[in-house]
Length: 114
Length: 112
Image 1: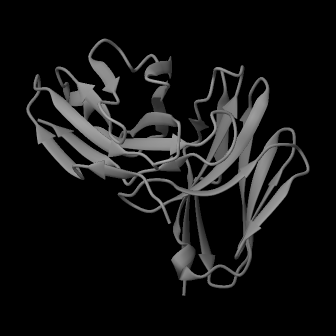
Image 2 (image 1 turned 60 degrees about the vertical axis):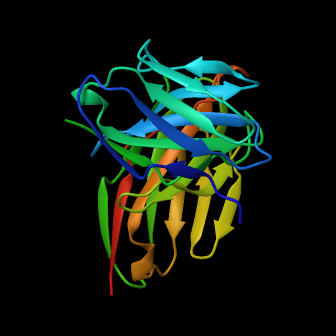
């Protein structure tokens, strides 16, 4: 069964450093998303991406964040200058259709900012 | 603003003891209600999508139902392997708004 994959599974970084989180969505999916979950809190939407551009973003997704689909398979989230409060699980998700159907999530990347 | 409230926060059941998890929501224009299962340290695992009031879906020991204000996830004769956090999420709004808004989740523990 196809699945969303993410690398690395755990990333430790120093405050102020740049990090890139990588995702490989399901091959025939067209819509891509990043969510995050701070320990003990809700899963929160960050950004959605379609046709090589951002469709929607939340208030969390400020100028420190960017997304890219550098080739036909990878989807990345970059945080330019990490803050302590960026420590969280980051989940990539993808779906065939934007407004219906299942949205399948990856296993997540645990980001720890020291 | 879309709101999703799940109750109870935690539920402990004996193996075989059926129960229901509640998800109440306030949205303008529901496009879909999603149920996910999440194990500790893992990503949400898709279970169901419901689109309109009266709709029901089943998968093994799980059955999800939807009304205009809430959804229930019924667990029949649960087993210890059903222990997990169950997340409810809604997709609402205009056609360009495809994000999911999640509830806090219900942590289910099933004792053998």
